[in-house]
Length: 321
Picture 1 (spheres, rainbow, N blue to C red):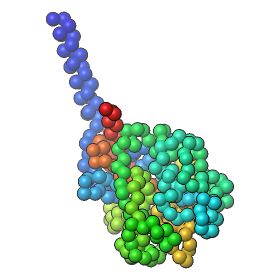
Picture 2 (cartoon, rainbow, N blue to C red):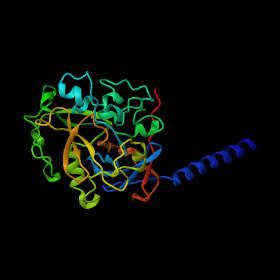
Picture 3 (tube, one colour):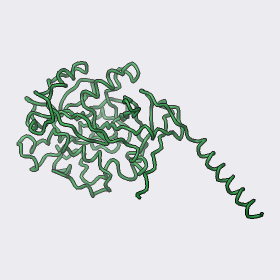
Picture 4 (cartoon, rainbow, N blue to C red):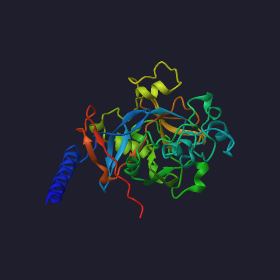
């Protein structure tokens, strides 16, 4: 009788603890424009903004600020094209920045598939990240948070030099410097399909998800500003590099002739869509994007505004059978 009573008390306590834990969580109906805190970088929480919700209710998050300054790709002899040897490549799939964004490797253990982003391979030695741990590594993201990221297969445009890799398309992307015109012939340009967990936006995603949502996000939201941590960790000494001023940031879309196969589309601090060569890290702000599984939208706290963002919990990984 006594054992039965003790067992009942233990059961009641366990249920109470569970209910208290649930009381601190909320299942949220997330919407475009909401702010979400998810993961860390440079030991600071990353603030994201919801810029799209797909048909399966999976939200696309876009970093609210530029979190780092890094080269898109390294120069070096892995490349066969002379321009790419000198200035890096604009080919997204093999780029250093794509590998780093999708890596969960510890510091110094990323097995770079091509020229490493070392000081020697960066323009004027700017912001090497050869020995940095991957963006998705422990300390930045937990295993549960990584498990909450939804890998997506999406379209990535190709330079003319890479059109032999194409999955479709008939010509080069038409150059445009105005945000309203950057998708002129996007649907007919050379492209391949690439799977990413974390990525830089394409010109199409920037236009359709950020610019078209400017009434919600803000007219100049597509122009990035660096975090205080990004400024503190960058050797760039330009007086205009601070958290209060806009800075340039990479897209993943290449620029074709006459620029050459090293040049990548970039959002300048004045809002124009420009291009720069891939190995120049001092100008290249990193403003990543990722998609969350709809089942992971469980918030420990927050109301979804900038001053009180939703703090999203990761989904536990399933145990192997």
